[in-house]
Image 1: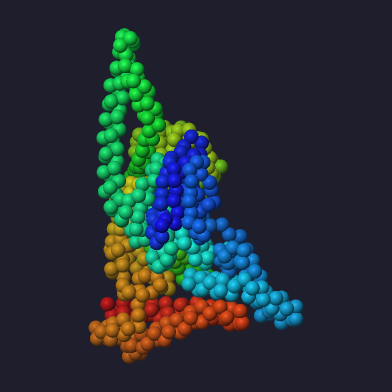
Image 2: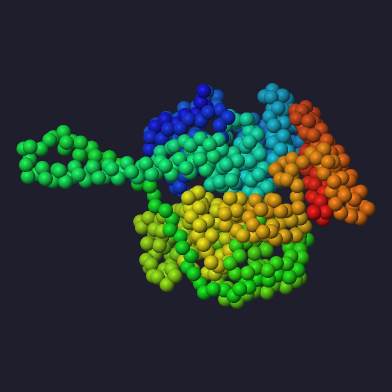
Length: 632
């Protein structure tokens, strides 16, 4: 039996029909990926399925009692709010009582006066009456599972941290259907891998809007495309979808050509019929009128983005040379003893977790930041164009045309003048929108506009900081082709693994303690080359104490470590096993609702210890990898 069905759904904004008699069915346990062009209505459809928006016509049927959780593309939280409170709101009406009890428990820890204890006891009784302990336990377990500090203020979290809070709020009520709008935005590579594992282990059905093809292939069992108001389903992986979609478009093109040819013949007949009106077939006239209506109602597939980079003069052969550079901010080391040599034509991917300093490293390479130590030598004739992931170069009040060519109606691309309206058309902006303000654009449209602005300026060095966020898959693939053919030098910061693999020729990756290392190839090549066991790649770590027992002694025979290091390497598996056993024990204790009812301070201490254990295990694994790397 289906969880949810959409029947003949219609939705329009202005004259554009986002949904046109759309039909969809979601069954239990399915993992659907919703794809389509930017602006096609995917987010609107998700909001309708989440019951946060309504159709103009048609019906949405939900299984009685269906629990639906929705995570929007940009979750909104009050900056001064606590993480615990935000996650607890996912439980509905009981959340207010949980928040009051949580506040009272914190207050009692500092104030043991009678009033504070009386309030805490009263709240305990109220929680007893509404099964609140079980719900409180769920919140605490979710905080532990997603590695969140319940006392942290939301305004202090990174974009990835806010996304984790939104996911925790959605999951805490154990929904039957989870709706995710671009969940990989703002997550780093480890966060994306973690999310893949989370979705794979989720018991209910999932529908996710994503343009990350590697993520899509990992999590989706069915692809649903929204194209010109219609929903079409494609079982299997993205590659299977591409083949079937190509055949469908070819068949559609043949059908439309036959239809147009037949309509043209009938138009010729009707004009000739004027000369012999009494012999005209009235049934044929009615059919022609129907053909005209069908042709007027047909929605043509939107055009393709037409990208080209304005070429600058060739730079010198050497673009940049770095020798033993260091950079620190306060007590944090961003770059430590890094050296590399970058030549004209190199396409370099920069990868690392959020906060590792990818943007700082790029600014050091390009001479926009001074080093604390070491030397940076830049090449000659560098013309740099920079794509900012935060789109800070876009004035929200400026018109779209003024962003591309302020004060002029023309842009010059590779020696040819082009009207700004025509140039915007290459990036799928309709002429009537040229004078619209930037603030009226969606996230994907802003990214397209920023690319249009970037490519209108002559450059031989492109710096793209997260250019793939919010771009649809078709535009991503066109951008890939453009960058592959770009004759200059490219620096690319991205968490899109497929995009990195298809574009870059070498990778600079962040390692522990501000270290950076250069590798040949893209993301998959980095995975194979880096000095880290494959078993530790997923999130959470998949290495077991037994595996490390088997590997460490073999490593010991390969090279000579100091006696102390060899002993440390031999002891690390046992140490990790002890830490993991303690972690498992604490998790079991935290699953008991009585802990939160009878000893809230103890529950808080246990959660803090589990977070500390996760860090200790990670540090031990990192040390083990470091010793293994020296052997390798």
